[in-house]
Length: 367
View 1: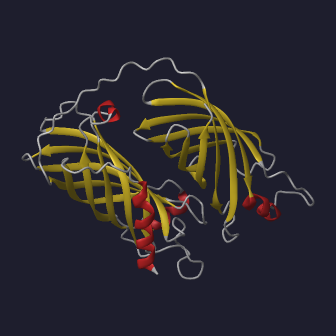
View 2: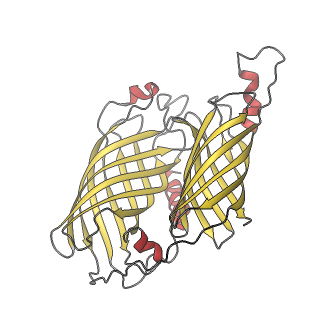
View 3: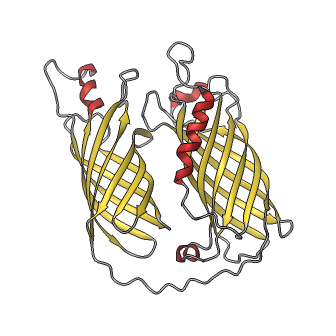
């Protein structure tokens, strides 16, 4: 069962890699680092799980970019790659997590041949957790309740070149695992760590970095897009079971430069789980049955990277009679465009540090 979970994790995550990124004859880099860190106590409810220092190792595979596509020069020639993570929580209740996380690594240093390079990495993938919540055998694990979880990686790094092929790397990283409230309990877990390692350039070829020749962006008209999101979540009550939900969104936006799109829109929410749990709420008077549907207004930003965009949104419920969550909500995720009109995305919607759902969306840009 566990091996099938690992294989499923790999099969699901590999299609997230941008097709065509790993080209023949372009410099590729493999690296390994070891880390030791600490679990961040973002909720008092997880304090009983912080008993030792997590440790582990990571193996990374990257490909250099050199400006063959315009976006590469726009972002100072980032690396595109995938990170394998093995993390031991040093706690029998939590066990270990194994993750595959596709990532982009962006360089702060402008001089690409400098011996010292500073960079940051962001990635989104999947993880397999060896231990999960079980009401009888592992009821203290209130952070991970499914075999598979989403994995998010943030990292700030310094790289020092020993030779043309070998670099010493030190970094500070944050790794987050959560199932997006597909099943409760789901407090999620954040591990901050110090990393030390080395990377090796497999096929060193001297790169000629192509300059950014893009002309200034012409004035853009407002665009209109619609999207339908869905998924499964266990809204609040542990053991109530996961049920489907849907979100219908309409957005007006404007591309303000070659990196950013700003927008504002309206959203309608329908959750079977919220509909079911009303009967368990002690604060509702007998016979009271508030509407579980919600309507929100949302402000959106997309950071455009190749055919992907990093999506961040903040919303406010204009209509929410049930008021099970706070009045405001946040959403963060990854969007993939297919041509000019169609897109798909995956995002996590939360209320402050409390995740409500992992949303899978398809959408169409009308103009």
